[in-house]
Structures are given as C-alpha cells and as structure tokens.
Amino acid sequence: MSLKTIFQDMRSRSRCVVQDASAPPPTDALDQSCWANMPQELLREVLMRIEASETSWPFRKSVVACAGVCRSWRAITKEIVKTPELSGRLTFPISIKQPGSRDPLLQCFIKRNRSNQTYYLFLSLTSALTDDGKFLLAARKCKRPTYTDYIISLHAEDLSKGSSTYVGKLRSNFLGTKFTIFDGQPPHSGAKIMKSRSTRLVNLKQVSPKVPAGNYPVAHISYELNVLGSRGPRRMQCIMDAIPASSVELGGVAPTPTELSLSNVELFPSFPFLRSKSNADSLLSEPLGSQKDGMLVLRNKTPRWHEQLQCWCLNFHGRVTIASVKNFQLVASPENDPPTAENEKIILQFGKVGKDLFTMDYRYPISAFQAFTICLSSFDTKIACE
Image 1 (cartoon, rainbow, N blue to C red):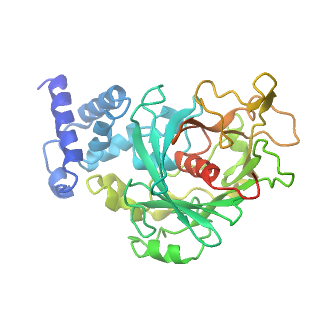
Image 2 (image 1 turned 180 degrees about the vertical axis):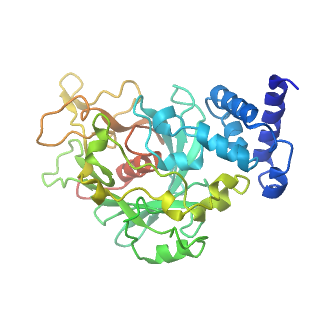
Image 3 (image 1 turned 135 degrees about the vertical axis):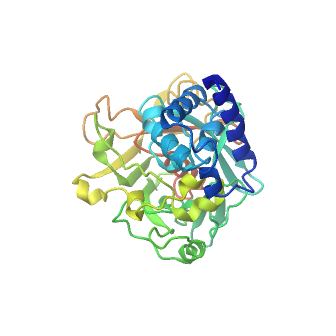
C-alpha cells in the first residue's frame, strides 16, 4: 500500500472519528487495531503530512481526529502539533487557553445576540470581515442586583455555571468600572480559588480532586471614572495577574498550559488525549511569584483627535469600520516610561464592524480566552464612565 493511499484512507477514517463522537469505540479496541500497529516512522510521516497540509479550519478537524484514534497516534500528534505561539494556529481545545502567536495578530470576531444576551467568539478563516469562522467560545450575560457575570463556555448552547464545558467567567461591579477575570482551572500551582456558590456548582461535575475546577482570579480590568461627564474615549487598564511583565520583551515567556482541566473532558468523548493520567501538577504553570517578576499591565492606546473628521481616531489597519466608544487597542507600554518597539506593539485590538459584529485580534502573551473576556468588559454598561 502506497503512502498516498494510507494518507487518504487514514484521513477518511479520522473524519469518521469526529462524526461518530456520540459513540466512540473503546480505547483498547482502537489500540489493537491495524492503525495502532503501524510502524512509528511511517505513522510519524503520515501525521506530519496531515499537519502540514491541513493548515486551516475546517480541514484541521482531521488533525484533531488523529489524536483520538489511539494512544500511539495521540502521543505523536500532540508532539507534532505546536502551540499557537509557534504555529499561529488554534487546533485543540486547550489552544484557547494558550498564548497567541507573537506575529502576526490572530484574527477573530465576536457576534452579539441582543435577544438572549449572549456573545460568540469565532476564529476568522479569511481576511474578510464576513466569513463564517470557526467557533471557539460563547458567553452569556447574567445580571445581578449588585454585579454582572459573563459565564464563558466551550459550547455554544450549554452556558450554565455547573456545566462540564465551563471555562471561566468575567464579573463586574455595580458601576461597570471594575472587572475580574476568573479561570475555571488554576493558571499556576500557587493559584488560590475564590469560594462561591458558582464554585460549588462547578465542583459538582468535577472528575479529579487533584485539579480542582472553580474560579481562579487571573486578571483585573478597570475603567477610569469620568467625573467631568465628557464623551471622550474610555481609559482602561488590565492587570494580568498570571502573566509576567517580561513576557512582552524579546525572549520573554508567558505561562502556557498543556491540557484542559479534567472537568471538561465530557465535551470531547472521542478524544482521549484530554484524559491524561499524568501527574496533575503537569497541568499547572510555575507560580508568578517564583518568577521574580512583576505582573503584565496593559493600557489602552490613546487615540488622536482628527480635526477634519472631528472625532477620536485609532489606526486599526482596516479591521474596524464603525466608530464606537467600545473600540480600543491595548499595549504593554508603561505609563511613565518612554515607549519602545516591543512594548508599543498592539497586544489586543477590538472594534465594531456591524450592528452586532465586532473584530477581535490578539497576540502573545495573552490567550483567546483572556482576550475574549477583556472584550466582554467593553460591552458592559458603564454608568460612571459615560
């Protein structure tokens, strides 16, 4: 059998793994199949060809399916597929928690549904502002008397706090000026969980006590109070608790999780690569305090007043087409230090392109999950800022 025939037949079988996710075959049966007994050198070459050829969605579904065929396929696929930082691609579910590429910006967009107060994050498949996109995350707004929560899920329809698809949340204060981003799994081994009723609901679905699912504060967002009542641009600041300030410098490193919390595996029953039996500590990054470094602080880039247009302007390089107070660009430039090429680089930009359509572009050292939650804060009503 030629390598081309193996490649085509294997791709066909791998797609069946995705389509028949509701009834996955037993892992032992897969491991005893003819595919599990392929020579390692041949298997590696086949998987490398798939990884190299299926560079964009929906074709990358084949790469994900390969990791669910059997243990040997899973191990080699995970070894071949690089993180978004190195590849610029979002492949496995864990990719949404890993830092984006260093260059260029990863292009995404957010769709808002006003009727049920939900928000959907998609990965852009083309440079056009109107493509269908690859679904990544969903968020639902839950308004309370003194605060507002945005529950974030891997599933477009299952947006409950106790769901196995829960990945985190964003919480605002009453005024809509301060926000806290909570991750559903600890970002590092020293992270402290926030005890609340929602934490108890999440833990009801927990699979392993070694990696507790819950609410771990990973970032804080604040909007400056507008005491003068002017309708100028918003001023915002994001303190990334789990990311060192040096991560934006040349050679800097940000924490990169390797697997999702075990409480989320029910969403991907056919992909046993999420069911790692390794020590739970491997899921956690090094505590920020042990890195002897300060936290990364992001501030919005100050727009310039355009005399002819009579409005505040930022250069979004064609990615934003409608003026809005929600539009922003975040950089890591220190407030009082002179700017440099590295810290003036745009880390996250967000802007309006339609009535309920917004672009979201981000890069290293923040993840898609962190970028999405920061953008959600811009949607919230800010009584004291406008």
